[in-house]
Amino acid sequence: MITILDKQFIPFINRETIENRITELAEQINNDYKDRCPLFLVVLNGAFLFATELVKNIPLTCEITFVRLSSYAQTESTGNVRQIIGLEEKITDRDVIIIEDIVDTGLTMTQLLSQIEDHKPKSIEIATLLHKPEALQKPVKMRYVGFEIENRFVVGYGLDYDGLGRNLDALYVLKE
Ligand code: IMP
Ligand code: MG
Image 1 (cartoon, rainbow, N blue to C red):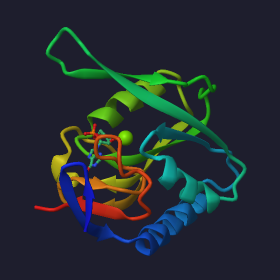
Image 2: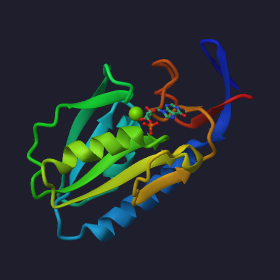
Image 3: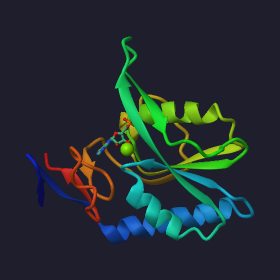
């Protein structure tokens, strides 16, 4: 068991299991994108470790770029709108693969997708390490999913609790 700030977490998915699964996802991408030059769009901060492990196993000719999402409160009650920071690359006519740490409610991904689609990529797919199907509020088509997990809070392997725990080499789940 580990403690981060006021919370206790227990081991959930170990490093070997995570990395074996990421290797499988990489193999799928290698097959699906033969003879293409995908543009990986890594969503910071959470996806950095997943992206590293994934692209190390992808020998395709490809580009890798990084975006951050900044959320700001709107005056209307529509919730937070997220802006992409760092999307300078030309994504028009590119085969884009978004790399995310987790799709939870799906709201972040829905907003990200609509902003990327404005630039008219040739294709767009999602690779996410984790997905919580029970939490999904908007339908999101995810082609590469590492693990579908229950609706519980996890840290490690890039995911944080209040900024901490991203460096953990395995996934931990909040102790209930
Ligand atoms: P969304 O609810 O799908 O919009 O998820 C937005 C963001 O919430 C993700 O990119 C993560 O940064 C964060 N998040 C969701 N679930 C977890 C979790 O279990 N642990 C850590 N961060 C999470
Ligand atoms: Mg994130």
